[in-house]
Length: 386
Image 1: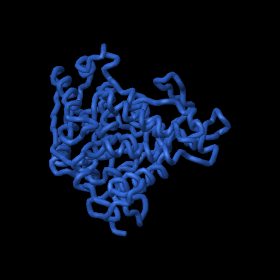
Image 2: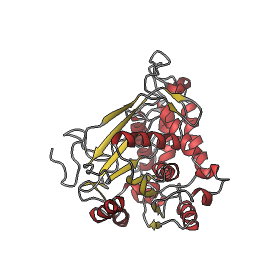
Image 3: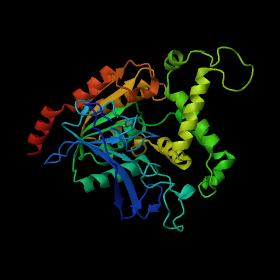
Image 4: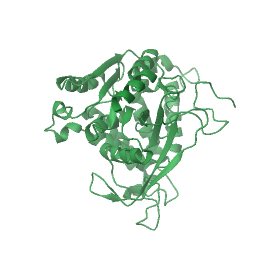
């Protein structure tokens, strides 16, 4: 297969092993851990051109390119990462990883637990936070020899990680892009996450989280969780344009099987997700979302929290995103402005809802490209360093 000219082409994931104990915010310790990582582009001699990509709830390390010659689907952010694209691999060295607690190669609930005869961690895997992820990402940075990231970029839960970086390691990044995200979840968002978790926890095949040891998995619970999530990721307009009230067979069947196209779509998405994503990981990821609140340590003042960052910010929201509405991005922008921090903000008119951050919307791509700047900004960065 010949890949598109603006693709990074075939990529091979790398597993980075960390043998030192990792102390987590919850008070527990992982004796060791692995991170599954992909890189695109070339790290320059002074290591000033590195960009870190942080993934969202169901994301992973495979952000761009292809794993096999016959792959039909590229990485989840292939529209923005590659030669000549917004995150231009002709100029930048791009790093994407699967966070701990994940199920795509990094240490998580499906990994062997060295303290339990190497049986899967399952429900014994500790709850992790955005700060824990950022801590492991900083350890990965040290392993790669990247002292300062040119930029850290993330959408949704990934945007929370980028923001946490600016607080925990303010001297280690120059640019921070927070996309379709929020400084903390609303009560409504926490409620959606709880409904999704309960659909998993109440599935009889969950087996208190030990489904792998019972040669099973909570298929029904995962399907329902994904269906609930997927509804919140799409806008009403996107659903209207994609499905309307179209019937699958063209007529009412007067039953409870699939009749409307939107029902068929949701069931298909849920089915696919249930086969590819670990239930314990889903529980962990949604809890990390719920816990995130950088203002908690600053007298619950976001303005006080945003006094710490030293980087330049780009904040992007989308008009039809009701899961992470533009008003939540504006809260962050206001807090940064109150602290006289350099911040650019754009609310983009898009019809795809929360999922807009995954699409190559022209103004979105153009804005991200301008923020990163390419070769000219890299030159000025090198001059600053020397």
